[in-house]
Length: 112
Image 1 (tube, one colour):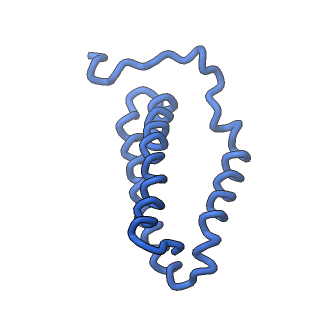
Image 2 (spheres, helix red, strand yellow):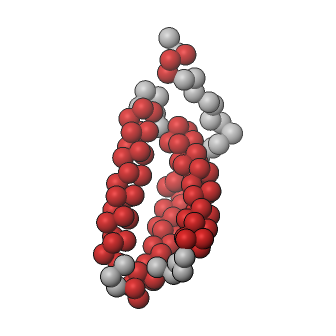
């Protein structure tokens, strides 16, 4: 909404895009560490479905909010504040109790 030309549009989309790889990698590693043995593939599928659903909802919402600039400008900050609130409220439930006691599981194909 604040883009004034193609150069700024590329810059404003490239910066978050550079961080996306780290976020997705962290999400997959977290899923791998927290899922019970034998359910990793299903957990990955849920993660991929959640990301796809979020992207679709964000794309649909951005079209609607483009027609209402004041609301659209405040939405990213509101989303970040909501995310931070949820993470702070749930941090005890999200923490791995004893990371030193965990052992890396062998890949499913190597267990046979």
